Amino acid sequence: MTTHVPGDALVSLNAVNKHYGQLHVLKDINLQVRKGEVVVVIGPSGSGKSTLCRAINRLETIEDGSISIDGKVLPEEGKELAQLRADVGMVFQSFNLFAHKTILENVTLGPIKVKGVNKATADKEAMALLERVGVGHQAPKLPAQLSGGQQQRVAIARALAMKPKVMLFDEPTSALDPEMINEVLDVMVQLAKEGMTMIVVTHEMGFARKAADRVVFMADGQIVEDATPEEFFTNPKSDRAKDFLSKLLTH
Amino acid sequence: MDVIIENLPLYWEGFLRTLFLSAVSGVIALVLGTLLAAARVSPVAALRGFSMVYVEVLRNTPLTIAFFFAAIVLPRLGVKFEQFEIAAIIALSTYTAAFIAEAVRSGVNSVPVGQAEAARSIGMGFGQVLSLIILPQALRTVIPPLINILIALVKNSSVAGAFFVLELFGYGRQLANANGDAVITVLLGTAFFYLLLTVPLGILASTVERKVAIAR
Image (cartoon, each protein chain N blue to C red):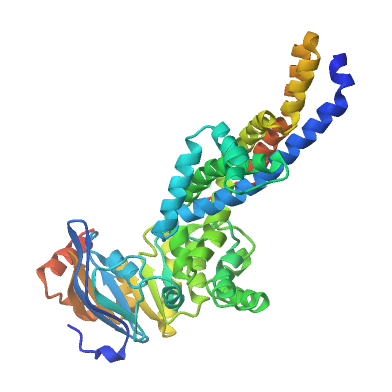
């Protein structure tokens, strides 16, 4: 499916399988993502794309196959897994900012507690990140005082504060009001331009066209197509993808 | 009324003992209960099992059994103490810890799972996720039930009076025996001193509850 050599890959999934009871949610998934690549995963709901994203930092366990980040296979549990997760930034659909911490503390907590960065440095870096995503002046507030779009941008800053090798986005704009989607997508496009390796599960086709190097189309737990955005949107090969795209375009 | 005023020093003495018993047992129970709740949600099956058995046994047996155990069975097993007060503290804190563990566990369950996922995804281990993210939020939501449990603890401490510990109820009983003509007054006096402890706790509960509520 892909022409990249596995050794070249920053994120590598090999023959990954997962069931939820009877339901086979991930069927023999093979996916290689190189450094600096932006891969957008799309597909109908229930196709396994979120599960795939969450499996990459082991928020979902897998039954067989292997996932490796920068050459290291994901450990089972414990310290090593925590270390590996620190290298993988994750942005959730529902933001999941720490509700009892200020915006600034949300961003500094990881560097201070996980990486042992001193508070002054962490504060300075966090403020720079918050400025970069456009919410610097919100630093002393609590998450609930911010709009959804602002919260999601803080969540991106929180993930970036760990200086991750790869960023995972699990439907980052699906819980947002329409007028707030762009402010989040703009931050993501900027991030893509700066060369961050990204795996983005989304329904935002505009983002896929604009920022993706590759589009991975999933249906029924399988990767059905893996192509450039250009190729995928103008000339989808499978009936499943044609069907999916036709449904999107009619509205 | 006279009987209360005449015996104020005794009441006061008992009040302080009850306060002491409740405070020490309360602190131990809070720590032990939180540890039990942490064990209950830990990834280690053995810890989960231990915590569950502990809570079910202590929560579902009468407090007097815990007292008999601490005051009579423990010394026979070689655990000796100078005063019965220690036995009372052991009984009260181990018994109360079971209830606190259940309250804290329900608080832990009330914290959205996404909070833990976000904490794990920035590389925190189980201990950090629990102590930095989950418990601080869980404890805020369980402050009202926790204070209810502490109020119950203050009242439960009266059982110690039956085990040779002279606290408020113990003195109250002595006074009632000594003043057969004023039993009702003596008991009302005793009740008043209990209220002096429990009513402020209730007020504290609602104040704290308002202060620490977290907006979502």
